[in-house]
Length: 192
Image 1 (tube, rainbow, N blue to C red):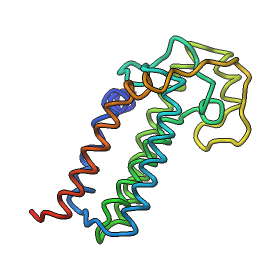
Image 2 (image 1 turned 60 degrees about the vertical axis):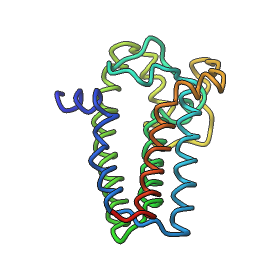
Image 3 (image 1 turned 45 degrees about the vertical axis):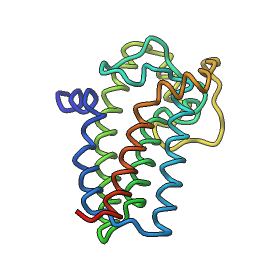
């Protein structure tokens, strides 16, 4: 339980060592860089879609929620933000390239699979305690991770935030994407 709480609380910082490994091994090459940028963009669009429905509460350091979000991408998967993050980091591994790109890509998948498995277990236990039967009903109809094609509308509809408010909420992630992309590009063209 201590590890799960630690990973949840510091989930924005735990990938930093992995990011440094990606940066250290980076050797920008085409077309891998284009494939990577495409994944980064897709992952961030996935995140933006989720944040529009969940709101700014996604940045919390405390496990829980005042209201269960089951609209938008949350009607297809219970963890769209984590899916978006994995896609973004896989995109960075491809974008950065390098001789060890396959090993790093596997490390990214394994790292985030472990971290999010731990966090999701903690979140699910907490959400069950808060929402009880409503959460059980949600878990019976919406998969934990792999998105389903059908849209589940069992708990009602939540209106999404406006796009500008969403972008404002998501600005830290967007800044990090820009900064990390820039560092990879600078390292590729300016040998240290």
